[in-house]
Length: 165
View 1 (cartoon, rainbow, N blue to C red):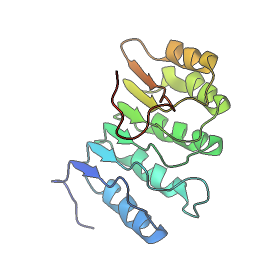
View 2 (view 1 turned 180 degrees about the vertical axis):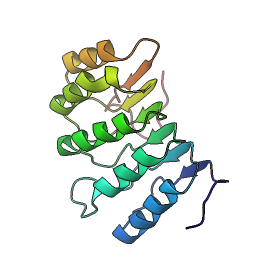
View 3 (view 1 turned 90 degrees about the vertical axis):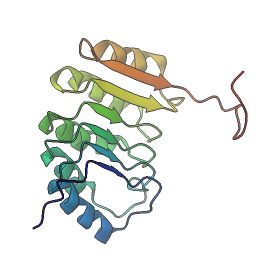
View 4 (view 1 turned 135 degrees about the vertical axis):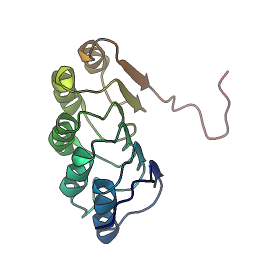
């Protein structure tokens, strides 16, 4: 098929992807030189009938991709092994945002045990109020030397429109 070499950044956040659009997205990811892929809040995870394996395989195969945002997709513990395989295969991927998913301490501990073998330089996790401090510390201590972990706990008392004091 035709290559999409000119496309460097793609942001499809807040779209409600369907199975046929995910197949098209997989083709696009495989045939492009994307460096940034933002696909937050797609409703891929819990309750979705969309198979994430082809999507993760497409991301794994794109050797140009450096930044991947997959936050807010209701990903769960059972998605973590496929995510780790994707990260292990794609050595170009340096920044991963898995904010606002449904990972528990169990899957974060699994991620932590694999971090040193991955090429990540930055891991972003917002809204981690359901994770215990021990798992966050294990994750932080497992980050490769020179990499960064951005963990933000959202305060439930803040509402939309409120300002930080």
